[in-house]
Image 1 (cartoon, one colour):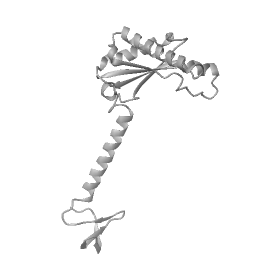
Image 2 (tube, helix red, strand yellow; image 1 turned 60 degrees about the horizontal axis):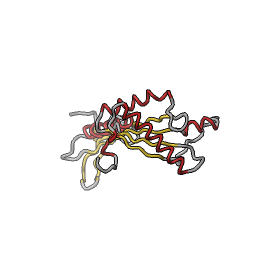
Image 3 (spheres, helix red, strand yellow; image 1 turned 120 degrees about the vertical axis):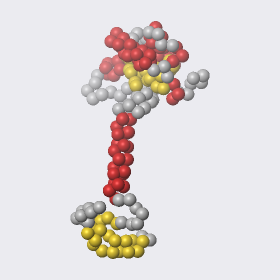
Image 4 (spheres, helix red, strand yellow; image 1 turned 45 degrees about the horizontal axis):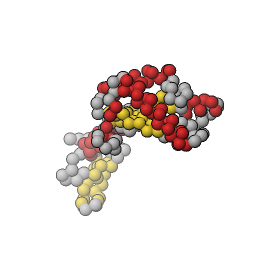
Length: 191
């Protein structure tokens, strides 16, 4: 096959003496007996790079590991104490739908409070918030053994956004975070 290459010189390269060196306008190609063409090697390399790029993109979109830890996260707000915000009923329905679609997934619910006040009281309130969300999911038909609750108290406060009022920050601290994960990714005994 003629690729429009012309012999430029004969050098000693590596452990092969006298391998002809062909020169094109933009590249130097060394040919050795027994090797496939450089073009075929480039195609294989390019295919690998494209495949890796597609895998990374699919992973980022959640198509490869769709429910690895952190892939599905929903934050529910509370008005006062353990009273769920009225606008979050749709979020409960969405979590319910996700859990119904795949029986291998579980919900890990973490309740939160602000850092002010008694740490033990905050821990109890945050646990009660997580249990409120659990009870709402159980009422929709989700089995209790597919739900784990925990209270974080005020150990994970939210950061104030630029220009945000203190009242707005306090309102965002009254929350429960629901993560949907594969059961095999949890370390719960008996699962």
